[in-house]
Length: 292
Image (cartoon, rainbow, N blue to C red; front, side, top):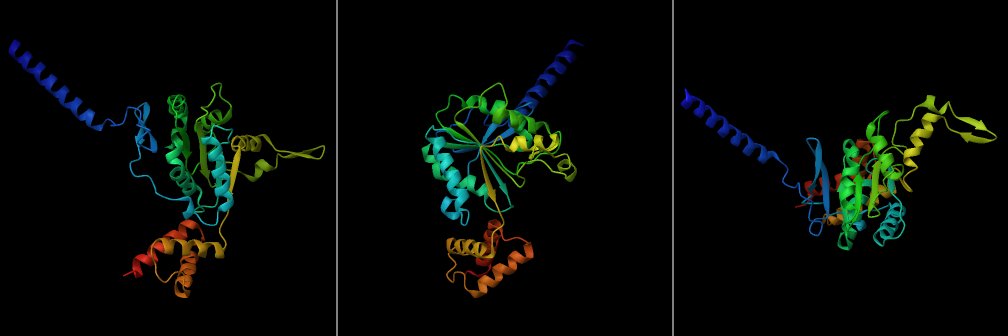
């Protein structure tokens, strides 16, 4: 009987060792802080009850020069980022407006422009905004300057991550690091759905318009971003200028000749949008099909 017990104990120990070995294989490999001297971008990833920064080994190589017809937005963000890098006062940024108009592309291009000057990027998904205190705490003592980037940001009513973002921007007892600049992109200016019935609560008091409580709550979040950059649908002329740029970058020898121009307009009509993204997609399709 003792020999049977010993055999069972040995089998259990062997099984536990095997389970531990498998568990180690699924553990994230980058639990230690990233080497910010070598890497320029990371993503925050959840793992169990905590999270970690996952290296982005192949960041997008967009340049500011590649972004056409958004010169006003490009200049405003560039100036704010240069202030940030120089240690001068700066504002957190909300880029909102039409889809495919260059909001997220502008963030990627700014990172590439200033990575050599110590700019780094951390991408955070909306559902992970509750982890913001854990994300920024290790950054206080770092010499680098960090863009905390949240793409396609929007909230539904009673979303807890909405409160977490408000606290990060301006409202927590803990101050945000001076070396962290929050940039968010959204199709909505106020980040929350807006309903007609909420505007019915607005009142005129001594000639001044006072919004209802529901509207005030929604405005209060976007107002915590000091810099608003609005993006609007492109005109036909702007759309074709972007197409011409990408055709040149893709080495299309004929440029925007009449046949290509008509095909680009038809492409936009089929998609119901004249955006920078649609222009890029057309250029790739056209060159891919016709370039020998």
